[in-house]
Length: 236
Image 1 (cartoon, one colour):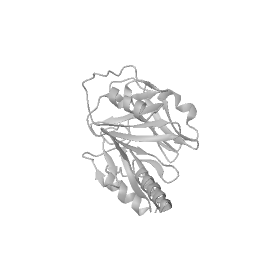
Image 2: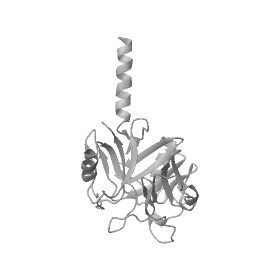
Image 3: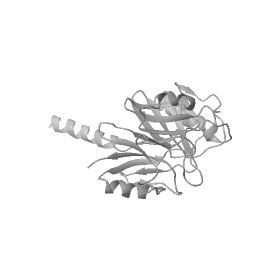
């Protein structure tokens, strides 16, 4: 009887980890590399931009993959092409952008989230080229929320700009995908990664257009077409 109970608890814990966890004001997906695959997506093989989670889900199903979690993966232009670097399956689709300009993307330091054969990292954008050789996936955005455990020095706890925001963080070998479920300012968002998830580095992906897809419980918060997307899949 005790053995059965232990097995049931372990099954429930494993099942919940495949999807996402609700914190107060945040939804967090913990990436499980032993059971899942993480990828970036923009276009199909015909060059058509996905734009919606529903279309990405259909495309993946045809390839015998199940989309279990997704969200927007960085800022994009009016034609849905990324503002900065995008690498998908080792192919660079958009160049690193180190320009000086206005807007959150250009708020320095900004950064790159990437995955290579050693795992996932988040680095300041100018540091990326020397690490780029074996990168399989990469997306650039800004600003960095956390850099080596420190909150961006220009974030203010009392900032009045509060939005639904999403981002990615790293704690050791663990990758977290996070979206707020209520409006937060940059400081509050960064503080969550630092204090609750114990991340050393975290990158802001976007706000306003931030959207979330989950297979279970079924959820799709998308209200506007998207550019790059980050997704976690499982094979049947």
